[in-house]
Image (cartoon, rainbow over all chains, first blue to last red; front, side, top):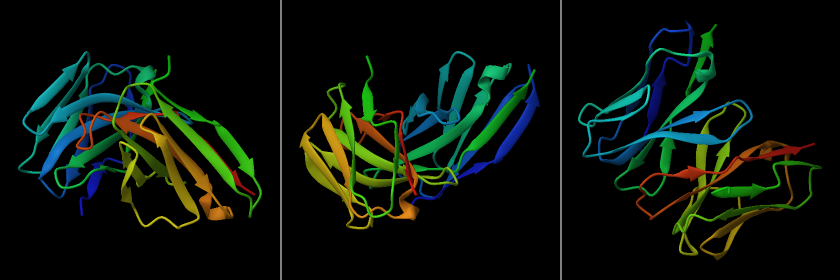
Length: 112
Length: 113
């Protein structure tokens, strides 16, 4: 059974600082890994999707890396802004499983 | 033009009632899902359907019954609602069963009183 852990559970930084969010998973046989953002009381917005054959994906200020063999992914957000305040969820699509397994999320607060 | 739309957005109902949540996707995806987000914000799979066929039923009480009339729609019917059913229910879709990424709806907040 795939277990996904996100560290830290919460993070508060001043505006402009870079953010580093960590995700680890127990079964390295994954199909892909997806990072989502969830604002309070809202749905999930997909940020980045990394296929198992890829090492990283980038979109604007966001960069996600994937090390499948060690079961880790890291989401980097450069030059954080107050609008980046949200909960960030890591989700793994296992190769032998037709569902996403989610971490509990990292709640980010960017102080102006 | 919402890709995955759920109705209603909010649902407040009394214990023992029966209610339904509807989901529609206009992405042409083959696979649809129901996820439950509990009070601790943890998301867990409930059901998945691929081309109207049930693929996953993740030890959900049989008071919950999904129905997929076609591959663009996946509805969730809940009988005899209990306090513990209060949660946010998310519908999602993906292009294929072994996905190329998931798209989520905005969620239905169910409160049982």
